[in-house]
Length: 307
Image 1 (cartoon, rainbow, N blue to C red):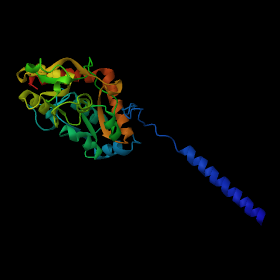
Image 2: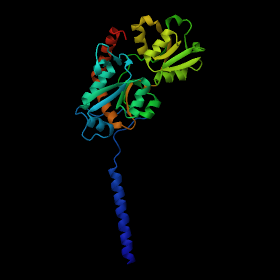
Image 3: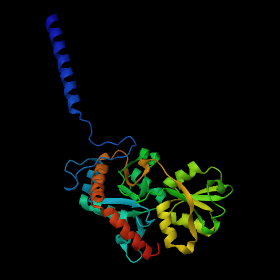
Image 4: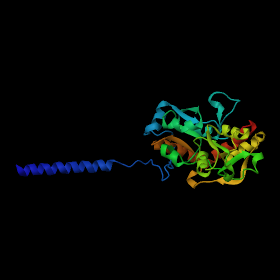
């Protein structure tokens, strides 16, 4: 009897071991991952639309038949409101064209949801929107709380960020050392807010404003003495709004490592498969040069509208 009990025990242990090995072999690692900087740079083939085996947010978008995209529509030429149009069509710009292509590739309708810039990432974190497309830069803080795509727009000449001042103050403000006892501003939640906090420690007051238009207005009106701004976008605004009397401080630029380059799409943390789909569309647009074409076209359109 003891011999049979021993045989039974060995058989049970062998069975458990075999089941464990089989389970381990069945647990394949997910093909969807982040890179070392915690953004997603892998892509999938999007030519067939959302795949039949889609999971998570990507499957939910397919089942709902709607892609909801958060944006702050006051950052031309990427996103702005065309006052000659109505409804969803009034949200235009190269980023909004990207959103429309994403929805078309997914085979769903698009709903653009306008909001303040400080809320666009909260909208995807809370599940109110599926994606945020709003000229978003990479930062480690953002990458820790949302999924970021690979970069889809890079300035032809990387100008970094710059100090924006009133042209009449060009002799008084030549660098960060001249901001002592002055009021400074940046757009809340932006890469420029981070750069201002890192590079300017001596000032009278630092305020974070909801939109870049409010940043421009604050400096132009004298409510603030200087702002940190994306150099390319700020130069575009300066050239198209000469009555504002603004300029960038010459020869003062703030640049970051390569992973900070490029505008990115954001989605809910952990939704790697959705971001692989987004990156598949980005690959198409980058290879064809379509996004750059849109950017140039909307740059001209925004200039005609006095943006």
